[in-house]
Length: 530
Image (cartoon, rainbow, N blue to C red):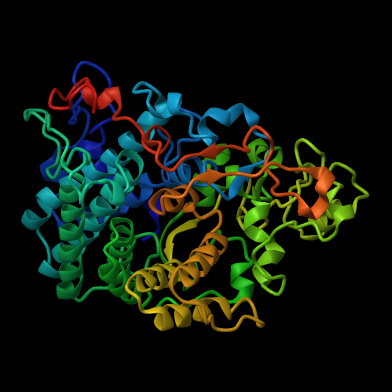
């Protein structure tokens, strides 16, 4: 079913889960909406409700610029504030891109609240499906299948919340630190939804439980999902693999990552260079955006697409860090998707402060134009990316949440921690050989091999929403190096001086968002200092 024709039944029955800021925080069944009994009376309606969850992932929220479902999560909370990604010259957003403690500890900021609001909206609607699916009229196989999909949405949402509002696992005292509010039932205005925070261990136990049940139900149903924008059996394994990696459960991560790749071969070079804006066989689960229902200037690609006509992309293009790409061999064809200076003379074509190449006669400027991956009025900056491109203007297109390459890196990283270096090296070779004919299987071991796996993960998954989260779970400092034109190619980095900062990995105030007041004000079980 094409999601642009979906009626969001779940949203009609309970869209207001955490969106209301008025007298009743949990007033979820307005009089002009259809009843829950009607919305979930048949498996056909349940299927529409599950499709509604997919639509929620590409919807604008909170009447705030750019808050658009999963696209915002990828860009604002995982790309632009990371170690390897620069939103060129967008210094007005320094507070967010630099993870300032004053932003992250503020309980009233909309940036603090958005992630909480969005994922609890998904969770609340998934819970409504789970509460009602067993009583719906229709085939048992459909009930099992749709229930499995709702469980994947809930588990994915809780995983995402854990990365933003909780400590990393290695700092959690084996999961005893605070998690989030673990809501497992659909919202009822007549029930008190006040709950204390669970522990991080309890949160991950629930994520695992949801995914294990989903995997079992997918299998029992005998049904398969053919639409990339809805969860499948492989998506359930992929979510569990990602969660297990974050939880440092290496064996589970390796096992699930291997199963998640089933039926999803790696992209060809041509597919890799096609803009990451339309589904192909490598995509395990993604987000669909229709051209006649685009989010316009708030779409994912309106902020990151090199060819987007949106001002946020034209005037402030996205670049890869010099420190990262300098470690990737020139024989790797994925480097072609970045404007890398080739000589000291080319390097000095950039503005010494911003990195912009403004001379239309400069070789770097011409190379950027020759890619055909820029809008006619786009500015040119050294190291800018052409990997992410809009499918239609001003910045629309579909994008993936999970693909096979991520699962290969996940499995390889987990195997390194399990001491199975030869298997990890073989996996790294499996993915890298597709894009670098000169790459040979690594003979490294231990920490050296792990570093090579994570290096290629950082490069291959650039711009796909892993930069900040991976840096956090690896407990690495953010250490952005400033552009120094005088040193040419020997410059340590390419970041604008405003963004050339170091964030200590141990400073929780820069790596966690505070629990927002919009939760605390209506939930007296949350302590003021939580």
